[in-house]
Amino acid sequence: FSPSDVTVLFVLGGPGAGKGTQCARLVSEYGFTHLSAGDLLRAEQERPGSEFGELIKDCIKNGEIVPMEVTVKLLENAMKATIQDKPTAPKKFLIDGFPRKMDQALKFEEVVCPARLVLFYDCPEDEMERRLLERGKTSGRADDNAESIRKRFRTFIETSMPVVDHYEKEGRVVKIDATAPPDAVFEATKAKLGKILG
Ligand code: UP5
Ligand code: MG
Image (cartoon, rainbow, N blue to C red; front, side):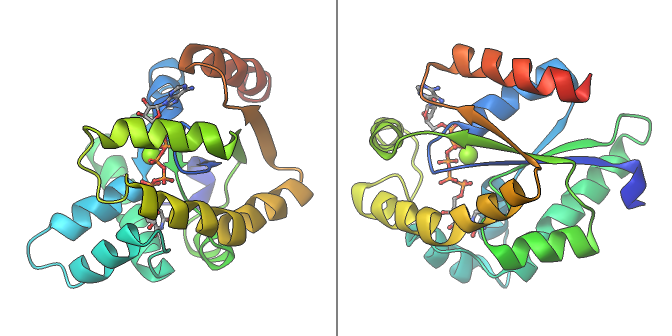
């Protein structure tokens, strides 16, 4: 596909900030296709015959970033598949939980397409921890435990916040306070995004 035909929004925020929750609402409201990098990696980890299964499993458990080649390829393939399946649908994508390291950000915008803007969900760590521990009671996610959560927070601060700062300097970040309940956060999202997307 041609980069000029597609609209991409990156959706960033710490672990448990509510990226997935807000993306689901944005899909209903604006007709985006939602692609979660974490979900794509978890699916690839489960895929029989995947050469990256063990690597992905270790990274997720330790809250580390999977090498960018793997994730960029999964995202690009998912975008291509969506466009092929629904050729007449609007080519608008929410890329959730990516890029979370500078090398990924530069690579994706070079080889796939530039992002129109970055939605950044800002949430205090104690609130994110509360959400993740609560979800961990039933989610079955290998990283929803106290030790993995601690590692995910560290990676977020050290490696992923610099990506947000980079886009902030370029004036491409729309920052939203994600502390309130989901409906209120979504109202705040629509208020800011509506003005931009029209
Ligand atoms: N919840 C949501 N919003 C709420 C609100 N406003 N008030 C109260 N509760 C709220 O929400 C988390 C929980 O909180 C849910 O129970 C929800 O009901 C509740 P969710 O919407 O799932 O938050 P989200 O930000 O999506 O949290 P998630 O756990 O998915 O964030 P992570 O960024 O940690 O997870 P992700 O799946 O993106 O990545 C997992 C791992 O994959 C990474 O740690 C990394 O190892 C790997 N990865 C890469 O290596 N590279 C990538 O590019 C991407 C991921
Ligand atoms: Mg998520």
